[in-house]
Picture 1 (cartoon, helix red, strand yellow):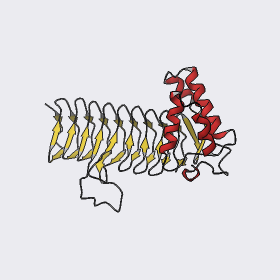
Picture 2 (cartoon, helix red, strand yellow):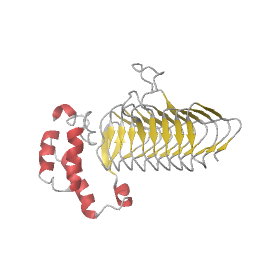
Picture 3 (cartoon, rainbow, N blue to C red):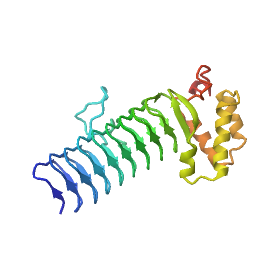
Picture 4 (cartoon, rainbow, N blue to C red):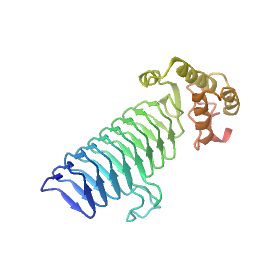
Length: 272
C-alpha cells in the first residue's frame, strides 16, 4: 500500500503504485498517476492531468502540472497535461507547467536533475539525462534534447531548440537554437565545443573531429549559413554531419552565432 501522510490531500482520480510515498502537506489533484518508487518528500503540489513514471523524487515547494503562463489559454482547461519519465529529481521550488493544447503534453524525459527553482514552461519537450542548475528557465514550446547541462540562471527563449550534448553557461540566455555538442558562452553565442561532455558520452576521436569540423565550417571560415550548409553537404554520409544538417534544416529561430560573428548576424533563419 502507498504510504500517505495524514496531512496530505488527494482529490479526484489519483493512482499510486504500491510503494509510493506521499509526505506531509502534499496536495494531489487528479487525474494524477505516480509510478513505483516515487517519493514526494513533503509540501509538493501536483495538478493533473499528470503522469509520472517510476522512482522520481520531488522535494518541498515543487509544483508540477499547473496551468501555463499563457494569456491565450484558459487556465481552467486541463489540456493534455504533463508526462514525466523515470528517475528524475525535482528539487525545491522547481516547476513544470502543463500543455496549452489538448493534443500534445508537456513532456519531461528520464534521469533528469532539476535543481532549485528550475522551470519548464508550457508545451516544453525535454529529453533524457539533463541537468538544469538553479533558476534555469525554459520558455514555453522550447525543446531540449538529451544530455544537456545548464549553469545557474540560464534562460531559454520560447520555441528555441537546444541540441543534444550541449552545455549552457550560467547567467546568460539564448533566443536562438543551439546546435548539438556546442557550448553557449554568451547571449546567443556558441563560443566553444562541449569537449568534456563528448568524451564522457564515449564519443570516438573521429566523431569529435567531425564536430570540430562542423564548428569550424559554421563559425571560423567566413561562410554565410547558406554556404556553410553547402560545405556540410559534402560530408553528409558522416552520421554526425547529417545530424547537424537535419538540425539546421528544421531550425525555426536560427542558430547561435560564433564568438566572432555576433555583429555579422549571418546565422539567422532568414539567411537560409
